[in-house]
Image 1 (cartoon, rainbow, N blue to C red):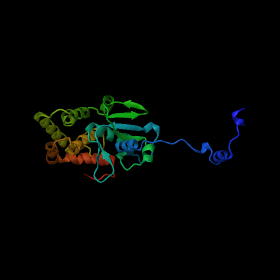
Image 2: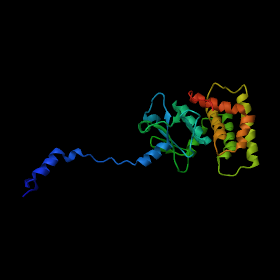
Image 3: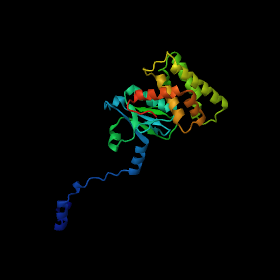
Image 4: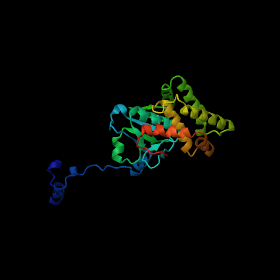
Length: 251
């Protein structure tokens, strides 16, 4: 006797006729805790043109937790190299600083993000599913500087980045940093400095000034020096930030 010929008791047949198995879809199991943690670590860049084409999609991977800029929902990185990359991406793609009031839907829809991760070689950038590591990113960005700008950009890295490293600072480190800050202060006050234009040196300088001022990793001595001896550098940095993000308030 075939299985098809076996009679099915009426009550059982009635149940499966009324509630067929095909109406019970697979259960979609989600790790809510993991998703919430990823949401906390992810920041979505604001794209006014709503251009989310794959050609412009990217994810910037950073290590340092960014800070909220005053009363706005925008966040800025607290490592100068990460912030420089953040501002450069804003400038290149005509987008503004990443926000935190996104929902799960906006996270899925956005193709331009920044994420805090714990891994080596940061910052890194994912473009079209390809990972571009820190050294290659910095090499590419160096090409943005020409002539004297290249020397000035290198001076910033040499004399100011030690404040964000793991090595103890010496009195010589502080002296060199202060001399460099004074030099750039004179530069932004000179007639040769165009306050109305925006280039990569402006963004690099702003990245260092803002992180020196607001990073908890930096000593109060250098913060106070900028405020008292180089106030124009703070004004210049905030001006650069507002050029990229017109809605931001001063800090």
